[in-house]
Length: 458
Image (tube, rainbow, N blue to C red; front, side, top):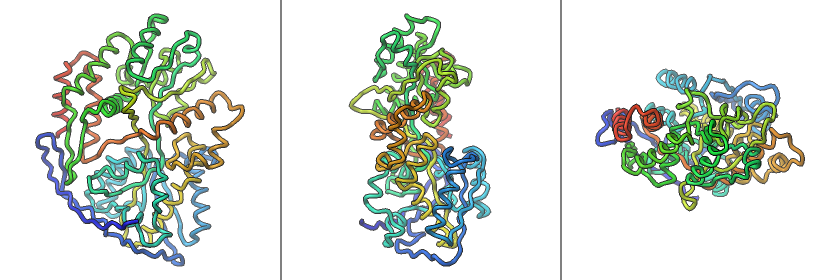
């Protein structure tokens, strides 16, 4: 594979101009770590890993128990490496812990992270670019071309959303997406067709409203995901980043306004709702209670969409599209990034562990135990995964997880993620709020967009 040597500067200021959001100056230098490394397998080295994993008792439950098993297996391969892991609460608490640790040089070797978290960490100069590890002259350290091609394309691309120059700052690990859960019992009883497009959603929702006027047919948990996904499906500009890493805010446009009006019409007709319009109650709770018949939510929350006593059969389908020739579904879930350490052996050890836990066998095992998606295509052919999805007589609950896995595999070819930059998370918050104020009739569409744009810029 061609080795890559690039040093580039992302120079930015704290003032946003003409929809361009900038931050303090920082440099991403791939050559802070060599592309020709040797790992010392004799000298003891400790890697610190911060995450959000819950404690579990058995590896079959995933999370910390399965991580501990991976660590034991890795120890057999590299006896001199000790992996110390620590749960830091939820994602917000983890980000704050790292933000607080970076100035003092107390950050971990590796950590769970979302792209917008990493966009903030970059400015410390301590985020370790992975390019020279991926392309290392040492085959034991490098990823082969086959390895790289084996990662789900959308998941791999999420490591490169920080600029237009190919910097890779994280690898995927705990990945999920969105699917549509639907009340299969109700659909079958009433001979309803599962929708594949948003226009079909409107049609079948009108049919449901005729059958049961007291219920809302369709719910979408996350308003921000709805805005971003619908924009991607319709090729509507949302955000971008230029060659210097400056984030551009592009969502305030006529096409996006028409998209919001489309969903507002469905909301006003009683066909559609979001979590925010339910007072913060998850649409999955309404779905389980039989008060919604279709609900879009994260595959990571699959269990929250299954009624406790199997009151009805749950079906799983890909999310609806505006254009079946331009499909898009958002990808979610944390990646893992590394931080620069004075002892390069610590960084190499962390990288080797990251390679191990993202290999096909391990990501398949993680998927089976947790319900999250494998990050490698070949994981679908690993025997433990094939045995899981091919069960002869699964329970009703397990069948939903299997269906989610199969739909996730189908959708993996058109997953996407948005570029990130300082304040990109603020942009996400503001566009999600547009639906809330428009649906609630507290602002006109034009005012909602103007206000969101102004808030997102600063």
